[in-house]
Image (cartoon, rainbow, N blue to C red; front, side, top):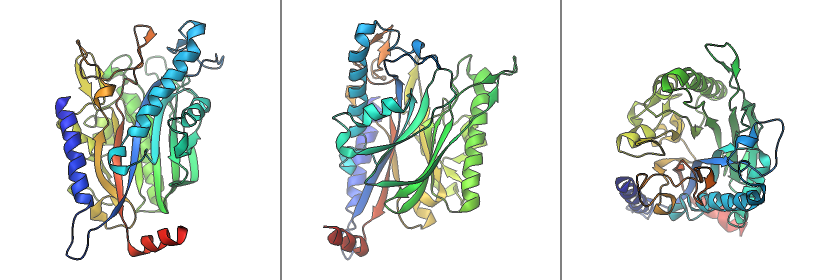
Length: 366
């Protein structure tokens, strides 16, 4: 974990140096936007919903008199993290935050209206999924930065091989909009878990990747140079077949061609990063990847990828014992720990050079 923290710090310094790089004429200036993904670990409200299995959530398993207090503390923990992701460089909370393990739209409304986040005026994209536990994906966006053009929820239909019965899981959220005029589509995921073992559950994640590929192909059929960002808790590492084979995500940016996908988290896994832990092993289940036009090599206007990170500051980690330096999760041993999540968030910086035209627009807006 110390290695991860050091690498993150070095990335920030390298970025700061590059962002003010001198040319023979003048220093280039850039707008910087953070795009993040965060598994919020059982962000459920305190009301019993008879249509889902929410009584099995950690909050609902607590004594009724404790639920409201724990819920507010959980919201505070999530808001505290979100406002800090990428802020050391972008000087603000993320423009886009994909989330998962949320019960409904209400918990997202409570989150964006929390005192730590309300100043950023986040909008919400969310649809109820058929997942039996009632957990959904969602996307938060700064209304000042991002304008939603359309959104949709794509159903993942998979079946249990032994029983033939359908396994109800999370839908995939697709949001297309303009990031300060730059058209970008976001696909927010929470792929099927490894319950029952990695091998037995693998077909569900391969099917989820195939649905992602279908969505990407459909967007490319409209515009072959679509800027598309895929994010989520994939319950697979970036080196598993679902990502490497089904999505054909590339480790090296020089291998990426039009209508292909680049995944910076393949290298991050190799470098020793982890976003979640099970027993004594770390995994990079949380990833952000994107299509070719967001790379410098594509020579496209607008925002482009700069670098990728795992947000793993010391205040979000266990400080001692067997689990030292792993995620300080919200719930453990049937109680609320005062922690955050069993996943670290991931994030990328998107940058756009400020031109004379941008300067004129800023002046005219004043």
